[in-house]
Image (cartoon, rainbow, N blue to C red):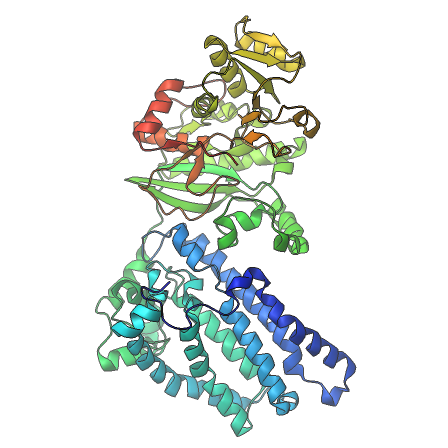
Length: 614
């Protein structure tokens, strides 16, 4: 929002949310019906192509979003932070695309001659190019300067400049009134082509497509245009801007005001003096060498959209199924097939914690594949390669997240330590912290708990600690047998005789039927990396082991799986604390660090217990 919002700040369909596309429904239906029922000579190809073109623009935008996030996870021009506030502010980046589609429909309905517009006219395309590089660029420059005047800036343009660190979609984030002015300005070439009889479908649609590309390029925050282009053809520096050129406008505000052609900044003295040097240094930047790497993976089929590289607004909220993602089922399953053959982890996120550089790497495999025996060798290959790559970069700690640390897969990471005994980096599964979090979540005054689900080393340690506290732990079947040795055959380990316990400690494998037997108000505390399915609304479910991160942990603009904003899993937190404390031990296999020491270290570094249930 602008610092002093002016008139017509909000888009008219804002209250509708994602249902704003309902505005298009009658136009789309009419265009399809007309194209299907009219004779070939009476059909309006332009009108028919408006909706497919809008979809292509949305896909084009998403490609830029994902690719820029992939690139800026490695390095950036402006190395500052993007936080949740910016993601929320830029959530409605598609408003402009929807508005242009509506205007195209209205234009075609009010100008019957559009139906006769040819597919291509060379003279019209040349005229459109000349109109843009001439009057449009010139008019935009002065309009843009006017927007930086205090009155207009505070009421409108400051909304756009709230994003110091830009993403491609930042380019289209403006108040409604400001965007209307842009539409009027950039529609001039199309109006003139229509008046001169030189209009063509490809000229109209191509102008918008090229405009989108260059606009997104300027806001992508990574540099890729080589300097040799400007050496080979020096006039190009006046005709084409670069991402580093426009990044200076978002950090300096009063310089580099041109649209796509810097020539007017040169003429009117608003060219930033550091433009050339920033362009050079941005190209010469080296990738960060992370101190800590957190290794995660895809979970559900729809989790590809939840990754930071996916849909920004989706990844900024806890992972859950959304109705509009279900409409994309064919794309979802195709992406699952493609990632099944993709052979490399990807950097999905980069954070800064004081001097500590942290990255998250994602294994391109899903939960269902981790549970498949024939996939284990391939998945362990991903993890091994990630460990070796992190080792080569000088990484101090690699934490194994989610199922990357499962006992069935790799003995809680122990196979890698045995295979590479001379590793300098430490491999951490965060088990001590997970245990501490579970114990911290057990309500005071509890005298008996029920332990259900697959027994892991975390479950064994939790049961042992509870028994030592004098709290009875009820278990049954194989779970009871496995816990006997862990608890040293404690008298506080008892066989399950009913489901009257008000506190359940649960792992993977907890069924819906078993949950239905819980008393009303039962507190369910998971010790597993994957959460149990929430079946009971009258029970209190805790999150999987996690902690609230301190404000000093920067550049956090997406949620970790199903956890709330600015909350991270125990394994991810444990990796950072392990590096900060400089501990020399691995924490994997059967090894569990001192639980109290790990807990105190987390609190010391500003991490806080997560007490909010879901």
